[in-house]
Image 1 (cartoon, helix red, strand yellow):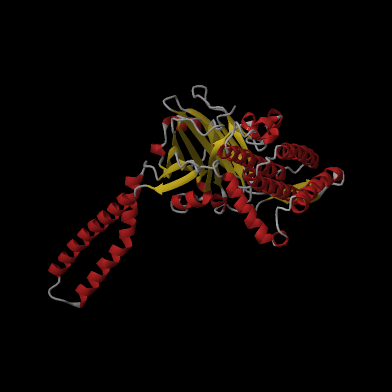
Image 2 (cartoon, one colour; image 1 turned 90 degrees about the vertical axis):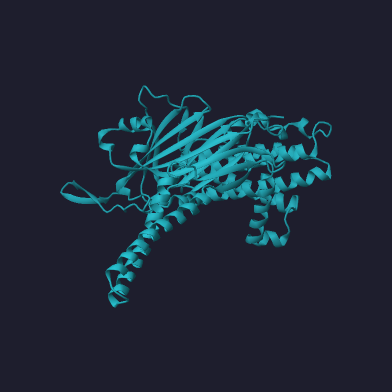
Length: 483
């Protein structure tokens, strides 16, 4: 199994995911080599702003198909499970089911070949029907338990319908696969009938108002995340240090200004217009250089320090599951580790262009105690949006000309850029492991992500870089959960 999975998430985003067990201590580094011609650097991209707007993380308990006892008939035995355990397992299954459908939907919408698209859609419909049947087959009879089941059932039914409709809305046009399209539409209609007529989960007012049904399902999504998705407490670091640097910078600037004022008063006799103009110039220069001086001092002091700390808590017990430190900064070439520099030196000569390096690091220390029953690992997924990078790219303006039988034609070509990405993974005191990826992108989308070969003397880590990975999907694991 891959230690880290890499895939394209949306048109302009990359997702990294990995799992950690109790007691793990892991450091994960990413070095984005952005070509200088892209025009991205500390002067055009604020790291803190990018962290909050362009990097999205999700951390939750993780379990494979073998750990989904909800679909096993013995699970609902009152003698073996408490209500709290039932709710935790229920939420685990519902959450992973929803994430799996969402993942497969994104992958399907990226397929442009009609035969490949509809074949995958047909398989997805079969799996959705099978898993929903297994889920509903074990509906509890106790009213206290049944309310939790109905919330999850209502949400999964609605979410599956919405995902299938969204897939069909982006489907390739083809008349050869009308049976598959009708099959998906029939499944959507049957789920709608099941919710609204058979179980009567939603009132007529809610059904007819898109805002009400959307908000209700958002609430149900939060309910099924209870106990599965970890609560995050993010805290910026260095606030006191930043205030100290601001005060120190202001003091040093005022020291220089005061010295200049004393010099000016000694040079000019009495209060003259020339003295007033000189003082105005001095104070003007103070305002101009004060911010620059403070920012330069802050960048020098902050270099290499973590920017944020994060505590991950179990939402049910409020116990601390893991602690993290996060770094994000543009690096100088002399600060880049030698091994990473060596990896980049093995590029083809035509790809060796000047680059700006954006460094992201996350250090995680997982609590050394067992998780809640049924949970063996936590999964971290981090999405990096490349939209802030794409804003700086040029649109393709060039044309390629061709001649055929005396006729000259031209074709517009797009401008493409290649972002090199070096990933470094270190578990505890073990030797670090490396991987390098090439991300080819234009202004509107990522063209491809490929993994590059490393030098022979550098240890690679097991990774997957494929736009068609089913990393957390139940499609792979559904045969393991037969009751």
